[in-house]
Amino acid sequence: MPDSSSFDILSAVCRVPRAAWHADAPGDGSLGDARLVPEETAVAFTYNRATHAVMMASPADLEDFAIGFSLNEGVVETPTDIEELEIVRRDSGIELRMWIGHAQGTAFYERRRHLAGPTGCGLCGVESLAEAMRAVPRVTGDVRLPGAAIRRAMAALPAAQTVHRQTRAVHGAAYWEPETGLIELREDVGRHNALDKLAGALARAGLSPTRGVVLLTSRVSVEMIQKAARMGAPVVAAVSAPTALAIRVADAAGITLIGVARDDGFEVFSHGYRVTTAAAAAG
Image (cartoon, rainbow, N blue to C red; front, side, top):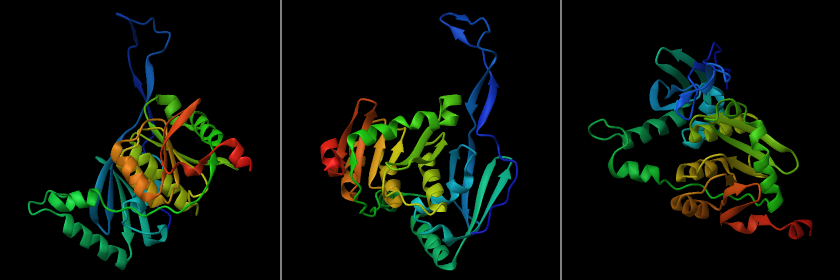
């Protein structure tokens, strides 16, 4: 895939003025008069000139975002299916302009035709329900991880979350392996976006998340599991709890879903055989 065009993208972090109050009175100014906050902008995904989606996102790691979103949404099967990617800055946001091959383009237009409602409202009616709950691939990775490895993986996140340390306002998605540690991490104001960016980063590096854990700093809704299944991730661990539907889909996809992961423990909701005791791992 050709390199995207380069130009000045908005910074992912913005310094803004603010007045800091303590109790019922403004502070003494010792904290300064500004705070770092995450930037947010509209990002449009277009394929062969047709707009597919517009997401509110952090304006960083946009090539990863374009590729990961395209893979996770099933628009393409491999990064090489994207023949050209151009990042276009507009007054109202950023366009990720992609050109895909004939076969992928035909399938894309056919999917859009079936999902378009008679009033032009986009995803409507029965078709949109079926699309929202489309079948996910079954994950086959057979990694085994001791409980201590899960805790180490989660403990590695805070130091790597550069934007979150500055703003306390973004989500993170990362991939961790026992032998290597934290391999890739991406951040975004949207939890789905962070996972898409991670998927794109791994795909661009020729990596598959089959030997470790995909880590999430957010709650786990069904869309996060659908994306993880598309990535082929056998283990997903999150700091928050999953929804009931996310658990059912993870079970059907063969994903080991771990939630409420903290320094002192975690909870396993599906396919717990991949998480072992220290004694079992040594044996």
